[in-house]
Length: 291
Image (cartoon, rainbow, N blue to C red):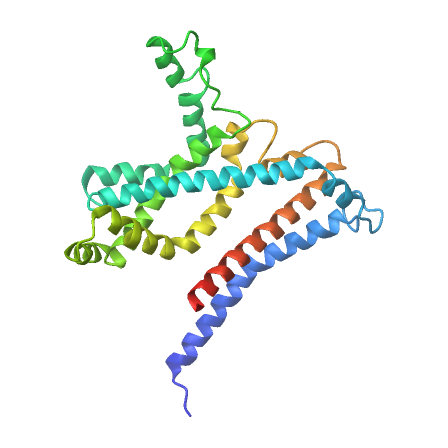
């Protein structure tokens, strides 16, 4: 059996692409985790005194890491849920206008805003001395600008959630619109209408399930992205609890060298937890498709 030159060329390209992916994406991650593991067990680093699990015991007994992980999951899950609900509503109501005219500029513009700029914008609008509090004061809704509800640097992470929702909702609207067109949901809508289904029934039983099923991998990856965000939680979050990324950097930059192994351990635990969630969700999804 002869193999054509084009097939050989394609196989070589696939091999080169796989090799580049391993060298640029997989290998640095494996080396980084390996270095963190060796450092956290005292084998390498400035605190090298031989193998020890002392730092691991300290971290696992410290409640701060569990508060930080729980807070991170709460912020990421809440922001993702709100953004997806808003994006679904926007896509179903304005699916014809998203890619047209002035409305498209409104949707695409937030995608060009860096996270740190979005954090500063939320701070100027929703802080105690911000734009919204001054408007409430001028209309007599509050007696002083200091009486405005604390949405920035609060223990519930409201400022972080607001910034993440502001950045992610337009992205999901554009993405859901792409799915809307590729799955020909407008034609399904017309078909369901002829069968007597109402607009709400079509949205809840046809359109939303199809969009969410197709968007599931992206939603999981975006959840991980929110979970590890740094600039927005750094500017808008409270001193305690902190999101995992902020906690790790804080421990790495402290003058106390004893905190460096702890930072690496927290990063390792975070990676293990994220990988476990991803594997679980995708396995569960695969089982649902197999059934």
